[in-house]
Image (tube, rainbow, N blue to C red; front, side, top):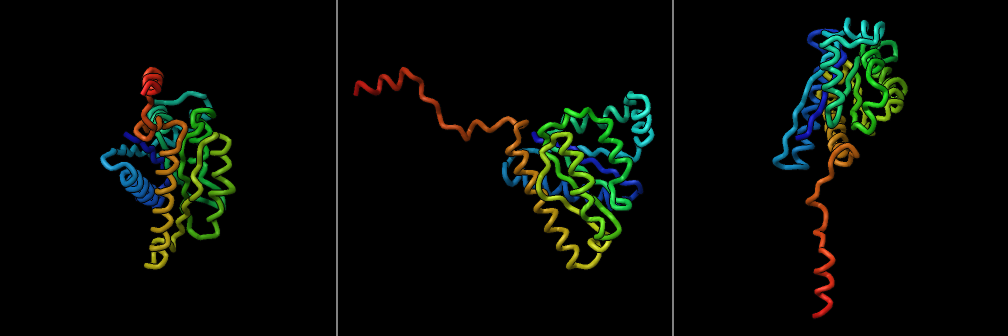
Length: 207
């Protein structure tokens, strides 16, 4: 079974950040199951808003309260992570960055990660690359090439919605490929050639 942790740092309920996170998770699940028919995917959601106070407390005390500890465990035990944050004044939310700050700096090494963000205007679209991707590079995560930014307009007209759908599908396929190629994922043995033992090879020489 493949486990995906979907982290949403939205600050409102309902949240466009959570909506984007759900659609990205669905796209990844579809791509993974298409690649491995019969395989199963366990999607585990981590909402940061309900544990915001615990995150701040952990930054001040170094101690993770139960809610935060459970969220950290969900992320660190997953085969892959979808991380979605709102963007304010061209930067990721403080809640999202604070959660990353209280993770062990070595715990996400080689974990496949899909990054996404939401914002009011497309002017914030570069925040994924200049504000979020460097943090995961420091954590040595395996970030997929396609990041998805959704502005307010992307939820509106059919043309914009279709373009967003295409980016979501591409990102899901990228994450599926990253999981398949990950050094953290046991490689499929059915793809390896059958090994012939040495005695059988020697026996074949006599014929």
